[in-house]
Each structure stands twice: as structure tokens, then as C-alpha cells.
Image (cartoon, rainbow, N blue to C red; front, side, top):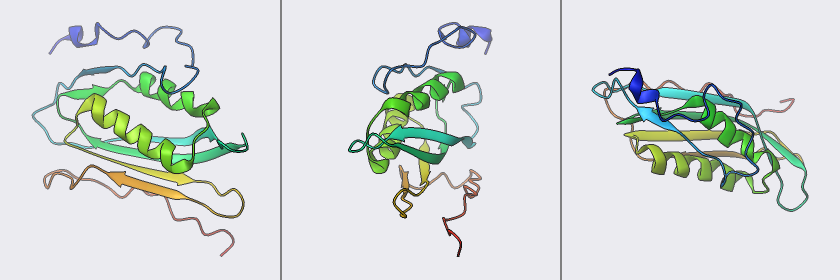
Length: 154
């Protein structure tokens, strides 16, 4: 595969503004030049933010997204802009986490995807949200996400 797999990318290498909301965000993808190999890709977003839909107060999470690509790879700048678009978006933790995973699954059609949404506590209760598309491929190494459960002072 040659560099022409990158020719349709619009955001990478340009001054792309942060989208106003997740619906306006444009995810971009490229052909997977290693589609004959089963491997895991991990994105970690330790400073993810969104807004509480009721109070407008900020919510913070450490997101870990693992996927085993098939024909497509997500372009990382477009993913960063998509995740950043949640900054002014009001939704509960569960909705944010699952919406991100479902959009990626729909867009990339990976062999497998999982997301861990490790939300920082507000009001004294941390909420962690986990989802995956099914069983990971047997031949692919999927490491632990490495985020310890919230323990407070305990």
C-alpha cells in the first residue's frame, strides 16, 4: 500500500477546529495496511471531559479504547477532535461511553472493540462503564486496561 491511502484525510496536517458537539465531529479512517494480521490498537484519553446534563457541571473520565481492526484504522487526530467535542456536551457517563463505542464500531467495523470509561467521582460516587462487542479474537493479545478501580482513601 502506498501513501495514497492517506489522500482523503482532511483534518490531519490542517488547522482543524474543535467541533461544537459530537454529532458534528467528522471521524476519518484509512485502509489498514496490516489487515492480514490480528492486532490490538489502544487509545487512552486520560483527560476526557463532558458536562452533566442536569447541572452543567464538568465530568471527567479516563477512557481506554481497545480495538482489533479489520479493513479500517481510525485516524487519531479525528478521534481526538471527536472526543474533545464532548467537552460542551451534556450527557450521563453511561451515554457518553457507549455512544463513543457504538460510533466507532459503526464507522470502523472492527473485528472487536471494547471501551472502559473510568469516571472520576462527583458527589462521592465514581461510575465506571465497560462495554465490548463480543469475545476478542483468540490469536490477539489484549492487555489489561491498567486502570485501577477507584479506592478513595481506602
